[in-house]
Image (cartoon, rainbow, N blue to C red; front, side, top):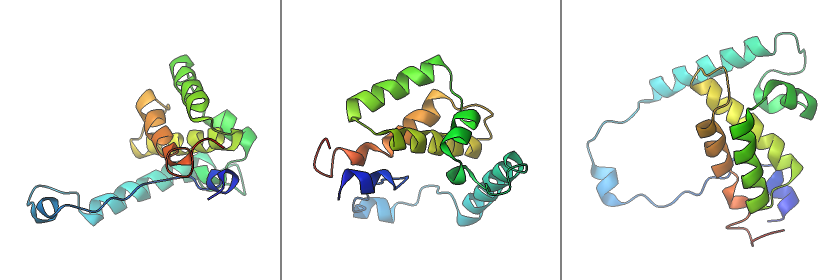
Length: 137
């Protein structure tokens, strides 16, 4: 898959086969209702954020300019993102997508700011850009 095409996909997640021991384990797990409620709450946060923007309903719909306004990050986060961009050789489009995904992760935690762990998780979702699909573009 080409780099420009991968850039247009927000989340890249490698799904590995589940081991039998994990399937048969009886440990606690999150039920669908809990996940559903968290998604609904996250969407409400985003709906309120974009009330004054008629064509924007969620983080994924933000333009580049709006992304830069809404997804402001501090110096530690800028340093982390710069390191990831440099090491993974990511594009400007990937930069914006990482910010949007990090904002969504922060929204899921009801966090008013994007913290390092939100950004790190969002960066992780871009890792397949360069690892699995043929190295640097």
